Length: 167
Image 1 (spheres, rainbow, N blue to C red):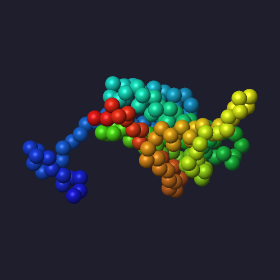
Image 2: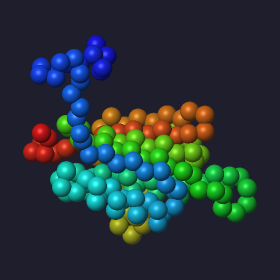
Image 3: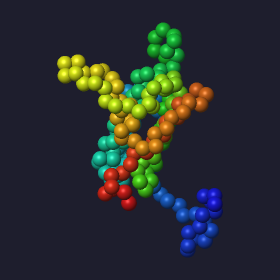
Image 4: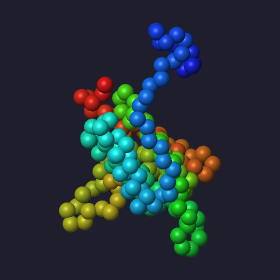
């Protein structure tokens, strides 16, 4: 059956429409714009999902969008800063969590970013600068997938609800 062919008793042959909170934004990959967007996401889903889910969502989105802002400026081969990539962000609440999709027109994600990761080695006097971001992203998400098509990166994942929150 196609989605338009689904039926619900009492509605006839029309598919039931679910109204779930959604968020959509197109933004420049600039740290201050990313911060403002994260605040807007929190405001949109406040009262709709738990603080735990919001915290995990915010952490993952901050890592992903700040990685784009820091590592994917366009025209890196030219001297000086290039134009900022544009990020498209869409989040939809569903029965088991928050489905997220991001696209950007920055440079391609390095091949090793999506390989399974563990935490970097910890030496008390010399903590590593990086290596935590993609570990956190992989640990806090489900169904993480990435691909690049032409000049755009596509990243999708789900932030699952805690057992008590799932309805």
